[in-house]
Image 1 (tube, one colour):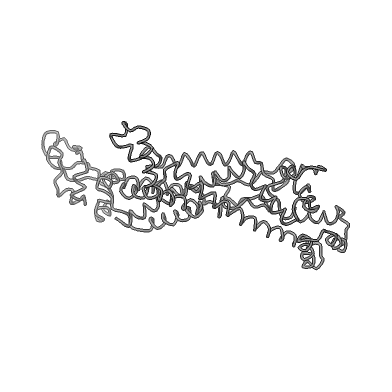
Image 2: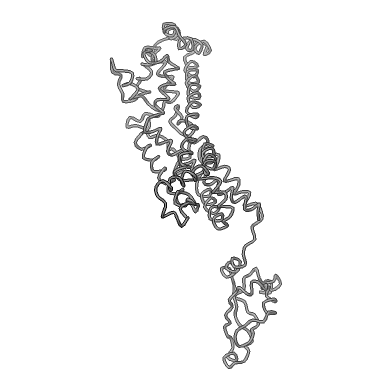
Length: 436
């Protein structure tokens, strides 16, 4: 029983952490969309790769129709104005075409030698050195050079993913700490409550099993990396109600450009849904159940005394809040996999012993009609009748068997030959079942 209870406590905690981690991911999506963080991170990555603002190659690539569709380059426009119209996602194929167009000066008839001269004509620096190395590695073949440019872009996006992932982890920990305080999710207190309350453990376990059964797993690193700047896809399951959806194309049909308004609304809807799920958990969350509030003298406390009581409670809850924040920073995919593993272990182990009352309810639900010898005129069953049908002494006391008189002799006060009782199939001995 103790090991089983430990497993159910672990399932309850993992489910709480999963919902909080998903909530953190939704809030992160809100922040990233509202402040257009992906655009800013992509701008910085392209700036580092192509020489930064003011470099002709960077300016031409950024304003290329395949990179920023529908945004025509404006002469004399400031760097901040161009950044405002910069995209959040760029396919690698479009990037390589934009770079080649710049080197060709938008003349598709340029030869391989002309491309080499164009690279040599770039200002001295890391960009020129990189392009010369890529062109040499492609054996001065334009098609191979295009592939090398795509790989170069992919490498830059991988570095961008690492930077964004660090920010996402910091955000998850910070938001986890804030959510732990706002919802008062003290991991130590939650574990203690689950350990002491069997009904609460059962309710949390049932809720966790239902969630795992009816929801797909979060995408790997969901919320910890930007959507793929090469394709605009987050790699998330489209069937999940709270996963980032692939960005919609613009009216021009250009790939890699997202509708920020729809992204924001989707993230907001998801955050509200998860917040409601957390608040509906059968757990002592929130500040209404602070122990000091249960004291009879609480109504007589002045504001200072109540503040002091909350401070004392917060100091005692601080370790549990920190545990919650650290757990949330591990991410939703981690806790979904952990929760699924714990549920599978529970399903593979022996079932806990149920109470006699629960077993009796199950027997009535799956009962069948059987004929048993009758007792006296009051309808009482002799013990041997129950024993013959396999009804144990403890269950016999719980079953309310009402005799139905089958013969007119019973109405005259004589003991009837038989009466009808409800007997579960599992309570009938195997030999009797075969005879039936």
